[in-house]
Length: 245
Image 1 (cartoon, one colour):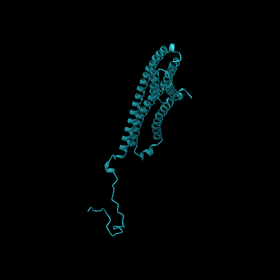
Image 2 (tube, rainbow, N blue to C red):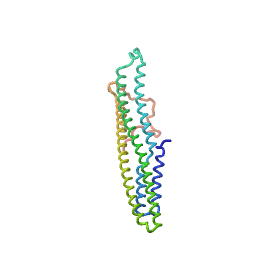
Image 3 (cartoon, rainbow, N blue to C red):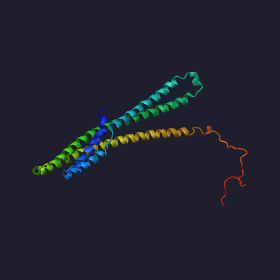
Image 4 (cartoon, rainbow, N blue to C red):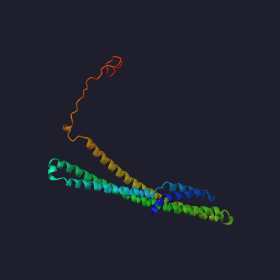
């Protein structure tokens, strides 16, 4: 198990620490900062390990697509000249060339998507570490503020210091979350673009597959007549479309 596997646990611990800290009898401002921080961390909660696994699977698709194109070339090379004389080699070559081009484009899309997911996994883990760090600081400051009330002579000074430090920690957290969201949006854009490309390619191929290239070669459909079918119903009325009264 590597560090990424602890990502979700770190996020959960950070959120829990923030809300526990917000329940301590500390300065109201610190309580508000702790609650807000816990909610803020929740907006970027994610699983670094799952994201990285998705990147690995996506990268494997690149290899699969490339191998498919290579296997077709290998298979065609095994067909001897006599057999090709009985088949249409030019049409096959055209189809293979088109598939190879599509495979190359798809491979590039998968590769870009895998790279974006790897980057996203790294940022997710970094955000988890930052969340735990900030949450620990806030919990400590909240506890310090609550404990300060036990010593009235130092309570005011402790509250002022703890509140200022909590505000500074919140500023840091908001900055980190803002940068992480930007990375998430960039990765989402790459995923959307890759999905649109693959969907468009599949749609074009299906359309061409069901559209006759030569209308003159379409099969001739004939009306089928089945003899001895009943022409009257049980009441002696002729079968067929009913006429409106």
